[in-house]
Image 1 (tube, rainbow, N blue to C red):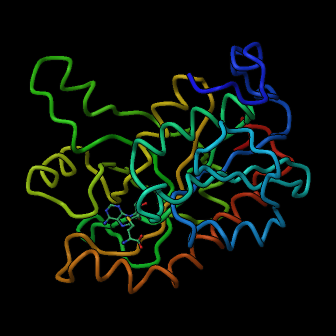
Image 2 (tube, helix red, strand yellow):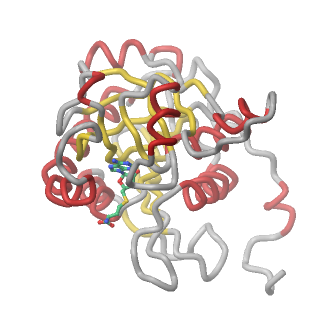
Length: 267
Ligand code: SAH
């Protein structure tokens, strides 16, 4: 282990527990976002500031912005830029470890994983649509041995938010996660088997950790590209990223405003 950072071992051992129970108003919200372009408008919107002394180990690229917004403490965590290559640390590994570290450090009542996603027009998705995921699963963890196959798929329920969905008229769909932006034929079959409408690179990884540490989690995904359309995904993604990020940020702001003052059971 590297020399100790400023936290004591004792603090590291603290078992994560949400700050408030299901009937209390949500007081601590953790927003996890993979890309800087998606994160920064929300940092501005909620008037968050970057931590001066990080709650994370020294040397990691993970960035936490925090502040008080209405009645809640909001932390927005972005896994930062890859230390070697300088691009956003997208994908499941970064998503899982920042989720773990953030829950341990911050004990949030609720997690929102927000980001862009590919959408399937055959399942009713269009560019700029905002989806709340009803459930999340992986599509690139093929282990064709009984029970390991289910472990690979890693199906998990998102926290159920019927009032939020009705009030804000978000679309609802299943989210499928894998570590590639493109889609192989095998991925496609698995996504169809997952009955997914949207496809990202982080959701199911966040869900794995959130469930393990018993923190409710919701997934807000805005469609940057149509996966079953005729445009190349990477091109379409980059073309739409700025405009769709605006739709995503509006949706996350509406969701946070809705959540403010409510308990988990009121969502
Ligand atoms: N070239 C991009 C790479 C981003 S990777 C860049 O500008 O850095 C794509 C990110 O958007 C991931 O965080 C992923 O969750 C999401 N995403 C958008 N469309 C996707 C798709 N069709 N499939 C998988 N992930 C997608």
